[in-house]
Length: 254
Ligand code: 4HQ
Image (cartoon, rainbow, N blue to C red):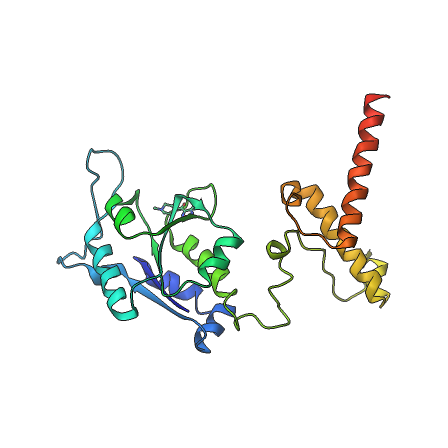
């Protein structure tokens, strides 16, 4: 998979792509992620990438020319992009489904915005996907772009090994994960749940299934509509629902 990132802070983006799973995927050649300095696509003496907003108001706007030149140059080198992603709080929320789709989309260009935003002609003529990583305002699109690249790259076949398998991932399964423990069996008086020490694989899987459903019920009830549950998970959910009904009856006093 081929990804080009356009930013005015290439060192910041490169640093994050030089560690961990993404770095390994890059050096093994499974993915080719290149970071491009937007200023390399300017033509003026000051290498300007921003200008004052038409209509007035605070802050600066990213100029269209450097972004158009950057996308044109990248397209000439890498081929016509299958998607041009812009990170912005105005975008659709980035989810596992979008990550999975983008992991099958290549070549990909990701634009990191700075300042108040970018000239709307870039968005309407070049950008295919406006994505937001959440409802908060950051100082730039670099961290959101890194979030997207990290989530997308680990879904590319051959990047994550069998041990770290993607199949069991929370948002693939539609449930939150069960708790994890490692040695020692007791730490500062805190024990590891008995079942996990038992060596009974069937019982351990049952315990984990129940914990996944219980946690999802408590923390993310919205995820339970639409989750594909195993028999044990469904049994646990039914139990929790029954408990809630019984509690409601007690409160109503009938
Ligand atoms: N920004 N999800 C403002 C974000 C953001 C987000 C990126 C800040 C673009 C101009 N991007 N710049 N949240 O807050 O994607």
